[in-house]
Amino acid sequence: MQISLKKIYSGKVRDLYEIDDKRMLMVATDRLSAFDVILDDPIPRKGEILTQISNFWFNKLAHIMPNHFTGDSVFDVLPKEEAEAIQYRAVVCKRLTPVKIESIVRGYLTGSGLKDYQKTGTICGLPLPEGLVEASKLPAPIFTPSSKAEVGDHDINISYEECERQIGSDLAKQVKEAALALYTEAADYALTKGIIICDTKFEFGLDENGVLTLMDEVLTPDSSRFWSVDTYQEGTNPPSFDKQFVRDWLENSGWNKQAPAPKVPTDVIEKTVAKYQEALDLLTK
Image (cartoon, rainbow, N blue to C red; front, side):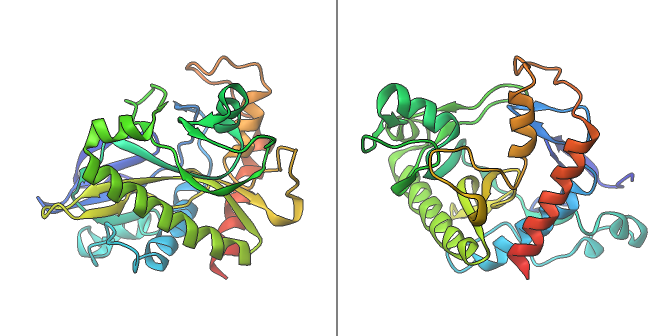
């Protein structure tokens, strides 16, 4: 579907269009990014499902901090035919100045955090108790920032001190406190729906008055690792509820994690869509 607004950015999975100097249109595509590489095969309806999950969380967590919603709908800024075509995958957003780090919160031990812990006993320089294993719940959620990569490059885990150097100590403190508060409330809620949020990544920006604002996407299967309470078991890699399903397939494919990625089998794509839809249904019903 062609959009009559001027495209100003095309990211790994989202495209941005200019509305005016204060607003833009964010459109979630069906592209899938894994290990910072965009896969050739889209995931049908992914953009629509993830936008609905994000919108649910933006509304649910709005009491913690401001978000990028303007209060406008796509029908306020696009011709009717265009708006109808993308209404479930598009959001009218505030134009914000992005905070130049990835704000990652981990509640459980897995992935790159597990590898770091096994080598050093720490994650991003934060010491953890001895004896933790795959999928161990951490004593408390931890903030483990990473540097933002250009499209096609890998994000790099950094220490909190390096985060302070990159964005300033005052902003780093705000980001850390906000990320931990958002994760804690969301993880507690998700547990009541049978979902463990293992870890997640938040994106923040600053508005024209310098107010920290939650933006982009929130607690989706693209930005988080979801596990089912029913199949969770410490010491194992729990079956994932999200894009980790594709990541696990890629990990086992022998791929070197450099573009181009291998072609993902149809059945893996279908199962991924089903998991995305299941997450939306569980969280919002």
